[in-house]
Image 1: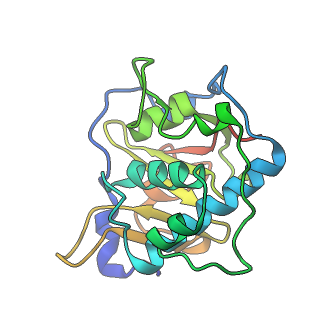
Image 2 (image 1 turned 60 degrees about the vertical axis):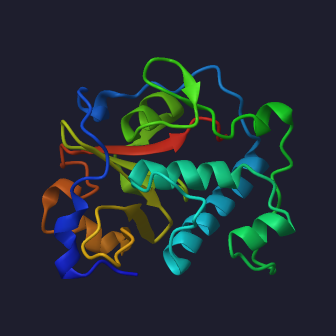
Length: 221
């Protein structure tokens, strides 16, 4: 689903204002966290994309609350870390087919990552803002979009507002404000369109001071 011209102005706000320095300076990875293996990380990334795509194709799951840009990431991450049995597939409207990624086969410590986000005050809980998600739960990769892997986060810092997008490969997915009563706020856009966006604040390019860069979830190998 490509963003229409009339919807582009709605890109601006998805997270409440947070007083913070420009996020491109936030380069320290979250430390001391349980890691997934490389194989588990690849499976996680595939599940995360499958879950985000399901929201785009069929609309938001009723199980997804706090519908904003950070909420999309939290939902997709938490669901990617769960067991994807027949009950889960049915609840999420995902058909059993050959395209299903392999299961992650998490141990108890890895499974405990679900709904355990490190917040700004150091506490751990089910909720985290976009800023805290990159500050305390992700590691900086680069400011060059060419370094992004599927499931990585593009972080934009407007000073008093922050916004997250999910790198899907050739396209980017995100949740923004609604335009009409029937609009669910979900968008996808291809990288060529986004890099030439009329509002340059949202271009994921090195010379855009509002583009903090590419961030990867800290528990991924």
